[in-house]
Image 1 (cartoon, rainbow, N blue to C red):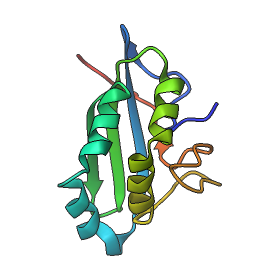
Image 2: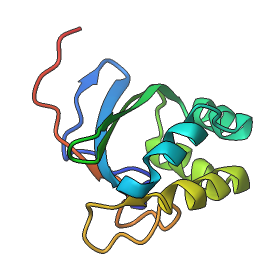
Image 3: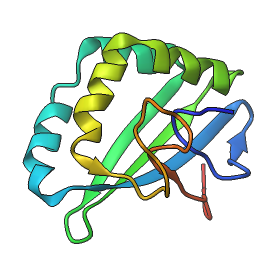
Image 4: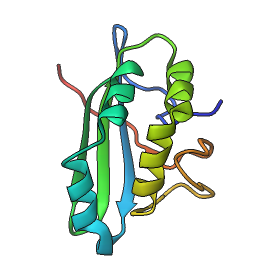
Length: 131
């Protein structure tokens, strides 16, 4: 099963909504560039994220460790199919090539976002949630 993003073995669910958390390392020499491009994400990428049933997509940066923490909600019913459509979008693949070059995966053997498996971003386990 190829996924854009990895998920914990048992992602938390609230009805049909699944929450995901992931981490990756931002190369220290690229912090300013990463922030710059995320201040103006390409419209085609934003559209595909929405069309892939992802909502409330956020990325946080810890400047001390260089870790990026991403969080999003998935509201669809077929995650694998939605992520496959995301991977097939040429604009998204172009965006990933740009952003991957600024990052360092924490997943052993990961090559890129586009490759899918192993996932580029490392899924993390949700240990607490309150609605």
